[in-house]
Image (cartoon, rainbow, N blue to C red; front, side):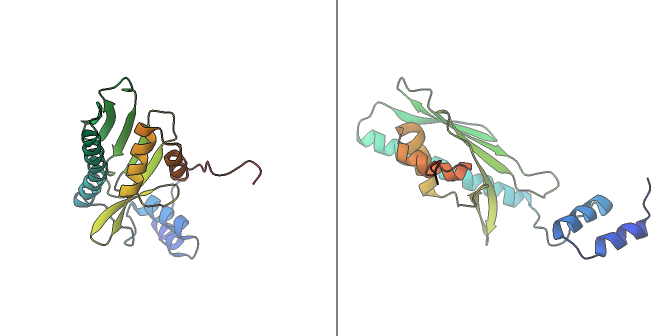
Length: 185
């Protein structure tokens, strides 16, 4: 069924829900509205660098502490272009892996990527998205909007590598669950 151009333009200019107008504009013209924040390669690169920096810094801090206590284990890393696996090396607990998978920015520049963080101990994954914050890019949990901070990464390391139940509880809202909730209220 063919719809005339005049009808398409008239439909997109009418009042209504903003999401519906955006959908109609994209389907009829293929052009993203001007107010949409475009993701450039520079911004996508900044987002990836910021994410890797958070995890790599926590790994360095953890390994420094392990060295000071003469612990026989270290946290190693296997790094790919879009993923990193942080694992406990030097123990029989080698099955401890904290995986970070980065989905790159979309080719059309509408999203600046996202990342998923999974622990190997059957904990729920955390999905994070980059957000511009002035001139820098920061990451936040997709479910709650909570910022992905150094403290959050430290909590991830404590949960995965240290079996810290309190750390796991603190992470649960970021994954879309709240282990503080009880079935009775």
